[in-house]
Picture 1 (cartoon, rainbow, N blue to C red):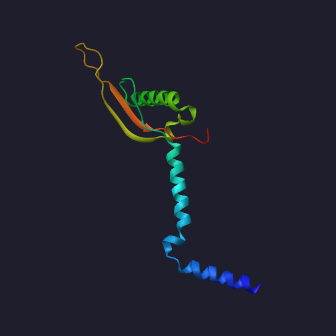
Picture 2: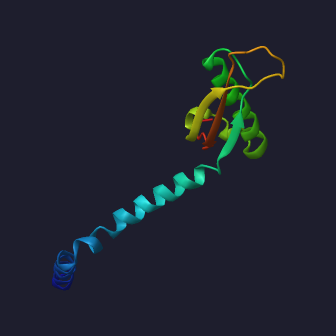
Picture 3: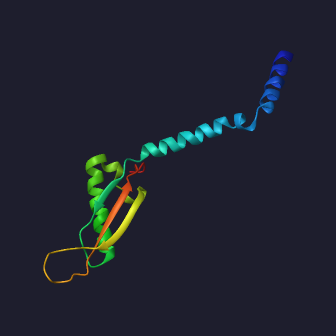
Amino acid sequence: MRFLAVLLALAVTATMSLPASAQHHGRKSSQYEREKAARAACREPVRAAGDAYHLIRSARRSAIKRWQEQVINAHGERFITFERARVIEYHCDPARVGGGHQVWNLKRCVIVARPCRNDGY
């Protein structure tokens, strides 16, 4: 019994004499594992351009729908939720539609985002 008490005391003393970085190695390791899992939960970026619309809101909705179509074909339904994606680029620009002399005030949106797995799906 006395041997166990001495052994325990030595273990505590050895741990306290370690530098702080060595004492928290387990914490850093678990943080690394979480970050690794998060990266694995997301796929490579997908780029999609929507149809041209007068309202930016409609053009954005169209771009998201196109993005979701491409994602579901490439990665499956678990990655379709746009709200879970990591948006890399999003912009709406004037659209060039038709070739006549009429001027249309249309916008087209482009989205580049990394689809991430929806675990609650």
